[in-house]
Figure: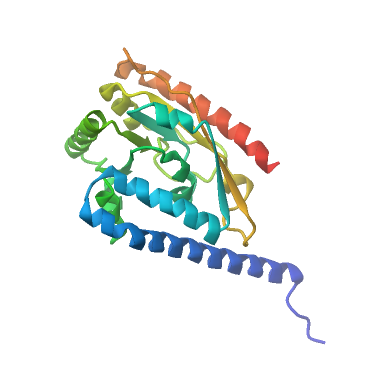
Amino acid sequence: MVKGPPLKFIYLNHKIMLYKIRYLLYCISVALTMFSVVPFFILRPFNPKNTRLFFIVYQKVAKYLLNIHLHIENKEILQNNDPAVLVGNHQHNLDVITVCPLYQSLIVVLGKFELGLIPIFGQFFTLGGNILVKRGNRKKAMASMEKLEKKINSQGLKVLVFPEGHRNREKELRPFKKGAYYTAIKTNAPLIPFSVSQFVVHRWPLKGFERLDIYLKVHEPISVEGKTTKDIPELIQVTRQKIEEGIRDLNRHYQ
């Protein structure tokens, strides 16, 4: 009698297939949203309103097509503080979805220069009014930061930065980079930490088609008035502690 494959093997293959299907739907949903809003990007290039429109549309697409539900606490903080520098934890490509509720007002994303080299996405990213920084070139990085600072002050923008610098699928946060804090001090814009529940650690994203709930918490602004670059280590410590406390609180939803 020929034995079939173990049930565990079949179960794992089934889960992997569902993951691939749902991830494909994720990619398709991003592409469809980009296609639907690109006329606005072309008609008003480099306007921060473009990115806001993308996230408003995409939040609805993600909810109904991917069965991903977003929950946000203290979103009124984002409406009452302009300009500002938002700092939070970064886990996965799915953070395209997780940051959707943050877009209550005009926000630009500070991203690495290499993002602009990705065909289609790079052009879309820059047309959305976001800022690219070439980190390896100090002179160009400083020029990008000066451009960003002028935008923040003249247009009353918020800038979103993931201070870890890279996606982090581990439970512990990586060391924070200083760029966001330099920007806050130079523009005198308050820092607004935000926390995202660790859906990667506690519930592997896109696993099957079950509902995925992602929770966000916006913390009270931290003033940088009177601060100098010497105060950056202290600001990093304070914001990191706020973000970690928020993550622990939000992760209780998965228990």
